[in-house]
Amino acid sequence: MNIFRFRWPEAEAMQRLRHLLFLLSLLLPNVGLLLTAEHTALWSSIASLLFPLGLYLIFFSYFRHPGKGYLWLLPLVLVNAFQLVQLTLFPGSVIAVDMLLNLFASDSEEAGELLSNLLLPISLVLLVYAPLLGTSIRSLKSAILPLAERRRSLKLGVVILSLSLLSVWWAGREDSSYSIKREVYPISVGYNMYLAAQKLLQVASYEDTSRDFDYQAKRLSPVDEATSEVYVLVIGETSRACNWSLYGYERETNPRLAQRSSEIVVMRDMLTQSNTTYRSVPILLSPADADHADELHRVKGLLVAMQQAGYYTAYISNQTENRSFLDFFAHQAQEHHALRQELEGKSPIYDTDMLPYLDRLLEAGHRKLVVVLHGYGSHFNYSDRYPKEWAHFVEDQAWSASPRYREELLNGYDNAIRYTDYFLDEVIARLERSGSVAGMLYVSDHGEDLFDDERERILHSSPTLSYYQLHIPALLWFSESYREAFASRVEAAQANATRPVMTNSVFHTMLQMASVETPYLRDSLSLLSPHLEAGERAYLNDRYERVPLQELKLSPLDDEAWSRYGLSPRRPVLR
Image 1 (tube, one colour):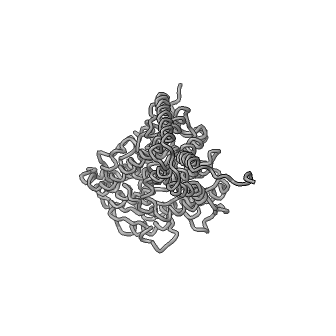
Image 2 (cartoon, rainbow, N blue to C red; image 1 turned 30 degrees about the vertical axis):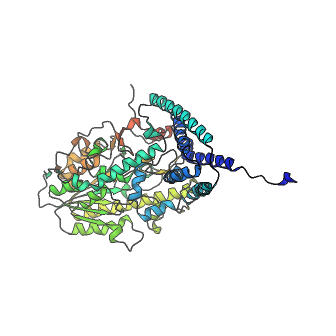
Image 3 (cartoon, rainbow, N blue to C red; image 1 turned 180 degrees about the vertical axis):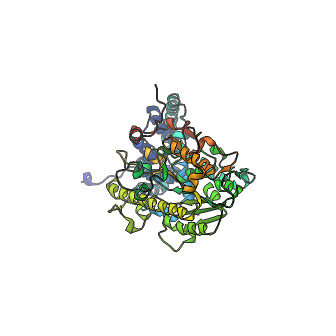
């Protein structure tokens, strides 16, 4: 009758099974990264599995109870859980510096919008790791792993680690930029944590490191002091050029600006130097671009130069403050308004809520005025960026950020762009009515993925880029009086409309628009200059490293979109 009796595994065998499960669970992020990566070389793939496996085997060989070792690795287990959830958003991407900084920068509303769409992957990750943590605690009272077993684990770990170092060496021969700290999880996350901590320390000490900075700026203009001048920089959020009808999109997303086509200059080939607000907006507002990123903690913002030149400055924002260099640049204005704080009782807050602030500034009688309007544009959740009555493309409520709701997501995104179109038209109308010598520059901080192809990518901020995150809308508008006073600048802007440029041109364009001279003005980067140079374009990556555009590891699908939308080739054309 004993054949019907279930036989439980021996205690030592159960400990071996736990040991194996612990190892496999720790390697899950490595496997996930390999399976979802777009570009994976053979030897780097081998290294990414063998190196951590060797380390784990050596580490666990020290513990008689494998569960105790697993509990010692609890911080890593939490990082692993974070990494697995992130893979559902950004396949093939390790937890990036910006993602870590966003833990300190994102507000509860923005985080809630994102987390509400991640409940399923979070639940699945909890189903994996919660039982294992429980098992690790229970195993402390079970039989120990024999010394001989742990010695075998140690020897196997040393062999595997040695083999992994050979694969690391070979991967380095194939790619000179390859290194363990950059490419092998979880070492790469540890390195990113170190870089994030460095950046936070720079932000914390910014007031000291920038205290002595001086633009030495002055206004040199044919427009006399008594004549009113107003210059507005509108910073958009998460808007991509290919969804603007001004750029050829089949849907009518810019009906109002289209009626002003003879008044505006649309920059056809504008790329962002960063796909996150945290990095991209400081580039718009300072001379610290991808070529000079190490200067960011030392320089002051655009509005300080404008003040030195005699302008009254104001910064109006529909963004949450995120404890970054951007916040310092915003507060350097003589007048600063954060709508999320000042309109705390209003929800939701739209970009058009900035218009009354602009009205008051225009009515205040400032003869020389520079205003920055920082909107929330097309940021996810898209259907929350505009009033419901503005839903031109109906069925705009997506239950989650999933490919099955791509149509609803796209409708909401396009509606948000139509609302930006309305907002910009209202800004221009106010500048027209002011009768001032006036100009406006609009630029988005970065683009967005919207399940555009078989990769099924969504949102932005991913360490791996796409065309859709890079190509952004930018346009200029000038009043009639500005066109008369500065005809050569307007003509230069029109001539530069198809030139390949990047967002580091915004700072210099605004200075030249307002006739501000400073040693930090680079004429070769201004959109209003006949001397604009289409030099090598570069991107500022997640680790604040300059990467030439031609060296970005984009997919063939991105190169196809690049060509389809008529952008200047990323790589030199051989003749």
